[in-house]
Image (cartoon, rainbow, N blue to C red; front, top):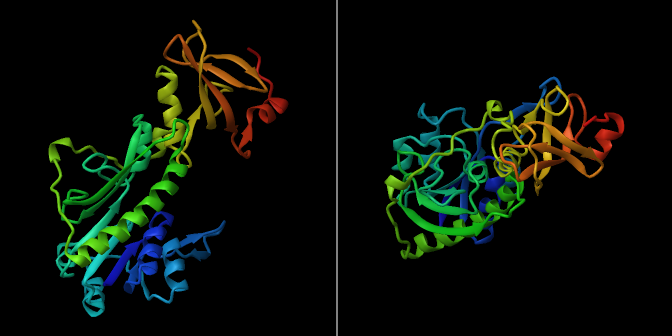
Length: 308
């Protein structure tokens, strides 16, 4: 099938590779514009999807907008039967949605209608979900609200963070994208409307989400650390008075009457902090002080002893 693929980050790469491997004709790839990187922002970093597309000899287009007619003209010239989108990062205007005769489909990293939006992987962990998955859905004007073509669930590991889950769902998304396109090509695809009354949102993350509220349970704070990894990260000033990033932790069954945010133990095995429940504490295992690299608690305490 003649396909135009739209994607930007690493999440989209397995979907692109899967379609290429399945023998489809990739007429072109759309990706976000290269962004400046480096200390002086004097070097442009190509997107992961662009790098893979060029390695396969596929033309790459990186318009700044999809709404000035330029992208539409390119797509009309490419004449795709189907557009496949995976984490492209832009809304498709109506005229592009209507262009390919077999429509536009999207690889979304949640079990729709739950977690519509830009950060479904993070929010699933933040909210303590035990199961998530990938949905292939037909794209419509409303974000992530189109009919479901395929959906597959997967358990979330008890200690799995957003980065690890991202990689797993990217691979699953690639597999489902290939299967969905095969069904569309064969005319066997089914389109199941979503129950919009069950929809939940997964908005963009922000640095304002980083500070830890120690009156919450140890499990909720542990979910915050996992869900905000690697960006923006969870942080606290409770341990030393300065903002410290929390990268590794575990929930420990341990009774304490201390006020939430109180350090009740600190040794090479971890820093135990009281939370908003009496029978569990959060044990910090890895952290990062301002201006320092990420390190184990044992390494941190060697130079910054904490009196309990």
